Length: 71
Image (cartoon, rainbow, N blue to C red; front, side):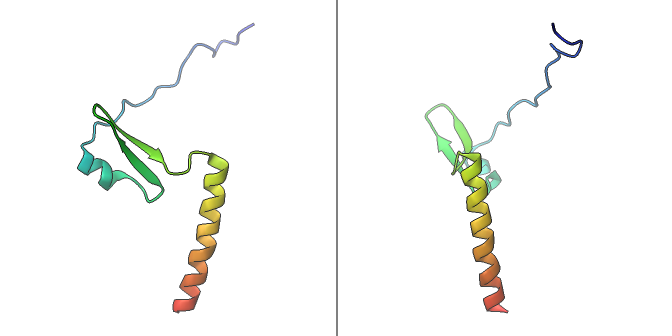
């Protein structure tokens, strides 16, 4: 049996149309811009969410040590 709420989908915003220059300005340091002849895609450098979290934690630890050394 289905509940009453089933069948109602979530509303997604339409994708943003970006030029190559705007895409490069928009991305974060952990993302790539994939350029194909017809499309530009933004994606994470590390696709696996668990590995991405580990990389962020290890990078945070390294940056914290660098900040302490410069003070």
